[in-house]
Length: 398
Ligand SMILES: Cc1cc2nc3c(=O)[nH]c(=O)nc-3n(C[C@H](O)[C@H](O)[C@H](O)COP(=O)(O)OP(=O)(O)OC[C@H]3O[C@@H](n4cnc5c(N)ncnc54)[C@H](O)[C@@H]3O)c2cc1C
Image (cartoon, rainbow, N blue to C red; front, side):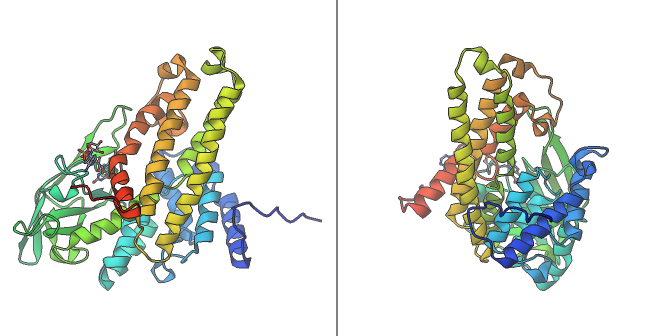
C-alpha cells in the first residue's frame, strides 16, 4: 500500500485546488528538473533558456499572470507553494525572470491589446529576453533626473543618451527604457516608457566588469536610434507612473527567498565541517546562534514575500510592503554572505574563483557579489524612505 505523501508545512492550510496544484508542481519538478538543467552539458544561459521552455510548456512560467495572458491566476497560497517548492528543489531561475516578474505585469497593466498580444507570449517562451534601461550615470536613486531623450519624428522616436548598470543587455534581445520626450515638462511629467529592439541601428552595448570578474552589467548607448512611436508603453510623456509599476514588481521579485534559502544550506553545510570559526576556538553554540538567527530571518522573509506577492496577485501594483521585503532580503543575504566568509576564514579569500563561481557557492565571490544586493532594485536607503513615508507616515524626503 503506497503511503500518502505527508501534508507539506507551508504555514497555511491547503484547500483541494491548492493541494492539486502542489502535486502538479512536485510532479513537474520530479520529471523536468533533470541533471541537464542542474548543471551538466550546457552553459548557464542555455540551461536557463531550456528551463524556461520546460516551465512554459507545463504552463508554469508565469503562474501569477491572468489566465487570458498565458498565466494561471495563481492564488497567493499557490504562489507560496510554487516558490517554496522551486526553492526546496534548488531549481534555477528561468532566463527571462525579470521580464516575467516586472515587464509582463507592466504590459498587462498598461499595454494596448496589440502590445499584450505581441509581447506577452514572447516573454513566456523566452523568444524575447529583455533588459531594463532605467539607470543612467547621473540618474539612479533620483531616476527622474534621467537625460536620455527621445525626439518625436513623424511616427518614430529618435533616442539619444546613455544607460548604465543594464543587467543582461549582453545577451538580451530587447530593452525597456525610460527617455525624456517632453523636455519642457517638470522632470516626472515628460518621460516615456519605450520598448526597443536591441539590434536597432544606433544602439550599442558595452559590458562593465565587476569586482567578481564577471561582466553582468552593461552600458547601453543610444545614438539617434529610431524606434516606432507605437512602442511607447502607457501614455506618451506619462511613463513615470508606468515605471513605478515596474519598480514595485521588481521589489517583489527581489524579495523571493530562493537565494537566501540556498545560502542558508551552504552555511549549514560549512558549519558542520571543520571551519575557521571552530578553529579559532569558538564554540558550536556561537555558530548555532548565528545559523538559527539566519533561519528565523529566512522564515520571516518567506512570509513577508508571500504577502508582497499576494498584493500583486490581487491585481494591485505592489505597495510599500514590497520595499520591506526587498530591504530585509538583501540585507540578510549580505549578512549571510559575510558569515560564509567568516566560516571559510583566510582560505576562503584565497579560494580560486572563476567568474560565475558565486552562483556555485564560492564564498569569496559570493561576498563580493552581495555588495551589490543593497543597491540593485533601489538602495536600502531609498527603501527606508519609502517605508518611512508610506507605511509609517513620516515626513517626506525633501
Ligand atoms: C545588481 C544590480 C543590478 C542592476 N540592474 C539594473 C538594470 O538592469 N537596469 C537599470 O536600469 N539599473 C540597474 N541597476 C542600477 C540600480 O537601479 C542603481 O544602482 C540604484 O538605483 C542606485 O543608483 P546609483 O547606483 O546611481 O546610486 P546613487 O543613487 O547615486 O546612490 C548613492 C548613495 O546615495 C544614497 N542616496 C541616494 N539618494 C538618497 C536619498 N534620497 N536618501 C538617502 N540616501 C540616498 C544611496 O542609498 C546610495 O547609498 C542595478 C544595480 C545593481 C547593483
